[in-house]
Length: 263
Image 1 (cartoon, rainbow, N blue to C red):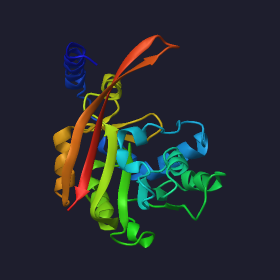
Image 2: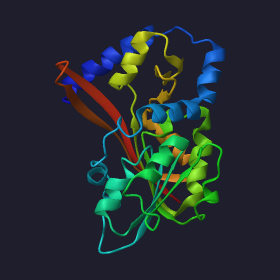
Image 3: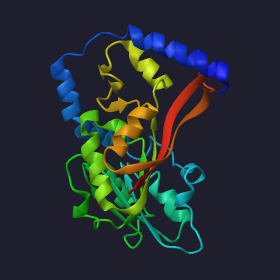
Image 4: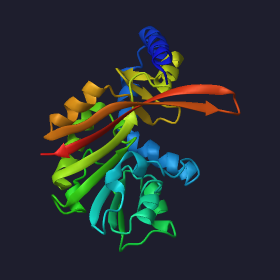
């Protein structure tokens, strides 16, 4: 996305967001937040393995996931869904052991039912990282990496600190969180605001199916991780122009991509 296109996109986003002043009743805000896990479980029960594509791009964006001179490593994927990240990584890195968790029982069951699931190389388990201790399934300070790909945005922001603290406890000193998530002024945020009944609070929206979506600024993301004892190694916006050929639309996506190191 060139600078002129980006400037126009952000200007349009600010105009749309400024007009989105309708308040969702507090009862519904509380309900959507409380039902976050349940609504994702319903999502995976309905869509099974058919919704998300395998994430083959992650190794290109995060070199830490690649195999290096036969060196063994361990990684936890939080919000593993049905394994669209886990299985491509295991296939390309023979020395990686993967833990995979999700707060949807249906999602974890689908991971375990996959013919590529091998308990000698992967352990999948149900966990709500905002309240269930990861150390119940993973030894404290044992992981080299934690991947958080479009995960934190799915939980209420007041629970971010608890989730980040939970991650901190299972990473080795020097371990790294690899993160990509939705960025401020992403086209999806503009669409939510244009509907005027999806905004629960600043930068937090609810989808039609009841799942949540939060949009991060770089400062917001960095402050949250550094407050829990991480050092910021990389924190940047990723801009992507995607084309919907069927509808002849070009969509401007904005993501945050970051690496946070445990001190």
